[in-house]
Amino acid sequence: MNTPSRATMASAGLTFARGFTSAVEYEELLPGVEEGEVEYEITRQRWLATAG
Image 1 (cartoon, rainbow, N blue to C red):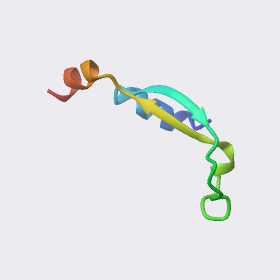
Image 2: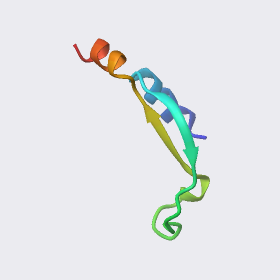
Image 3: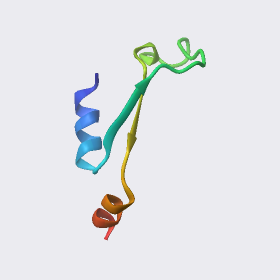
């Protein structure tokens, strides 16, 4: 888990949606991809509140 990156996402108003493992084989291209991927989301209401 990359705590500083998660803190950055939270400060931007995003919330953790899910963690998953990619079906594509990138191990030789991207170091650390074997730890999995993450997806964040933001609601329209929150986006509009922070964008203005």
